[in-house]
Length: 85
Image (cartoon, one colour):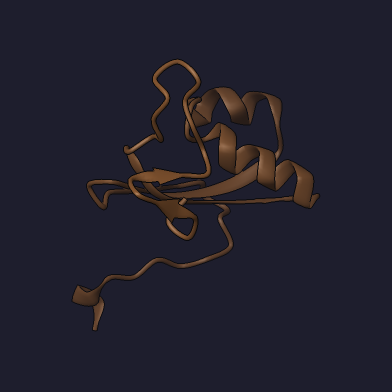
């Protein structure tokens, strides 16, 4: 969503409110197929990770709007901040 933003909206819209979710700053997913990874990045805006992980095999990384971080234990990337310099 952070790379596809226009006037307060991003490419994901909640059909009930007509607005874009604001609780996530960035999300990544890694899966066996690009289609599953793409579906999971969208689903993570609306569903809890535990429920998705029960049904699908993927890894994720999420940076919330408050800059808190959540990621699966096997997420194949590292996160760092300006404070890590």
